[in-house]
Image (cartoon, rainbow, N blue to C red; front, top):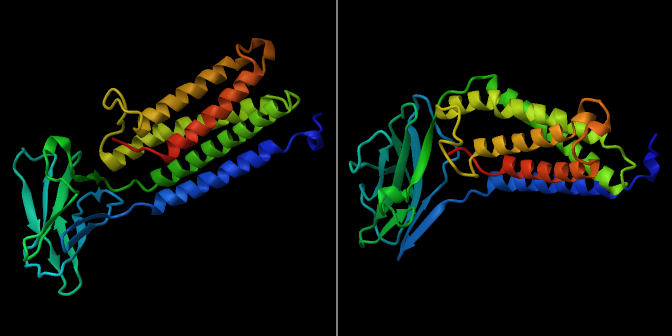
Length: 298
């Protein structure tokens, strides 16, 4: 039996440190969205970020804040928009209304249909002729999409979100343990066995598959109206489906390379060394964490 007291402690300290840093990064991502602000002379236009999509049958409520040393007429703040179902270059616009003296303006756009999205920009003009537009440079050309956009969302199926969160949490916990066990194996020069790292990786990959594919596909359909947004539809690494697919294939491959230990048929059946597996597990785990907390669906 391995003498735990003689095992190196730095793998534990390192994994705890990384867990804390990831937690701080997640909190930062949640609160770091800033409004877009454009200032023209004495006119200031501020449009807050939209944090979620439009739910089925619900209007899109848009807000803005405007300040100027000069008066702003009743029709001085407008939102220009079109949906992906509209034929360009037909552009709609709507006057944003305000409660006098507050500087806050609001407008509601009609509900979207399945697979549609809005492209829009906000423009404010004061009595001195100053004009501010958010985002800056809009409308530009529509093909450049110098516009803010907002996706359609269907009403959530009540069991999908908790199931997705639970399986994702289990995947992250098992993969995090796998990275710790792999570091222990490396730090101890192989004295700390590799079996725990292989087992934890196996369970982590299983839950990672469940949360991203059967559950993830249903969740994507519930939110966006399409179960898959990755290749060949989108060839971008920042797409969540592409990242999940790459990470799953990576871990499935290294587990297959350690099939002797995984299936308990003897280490002689392994194709790579335990040290190589440990390094691949550590690198792969932190790549998965990076993929999970960055990027989204296209």
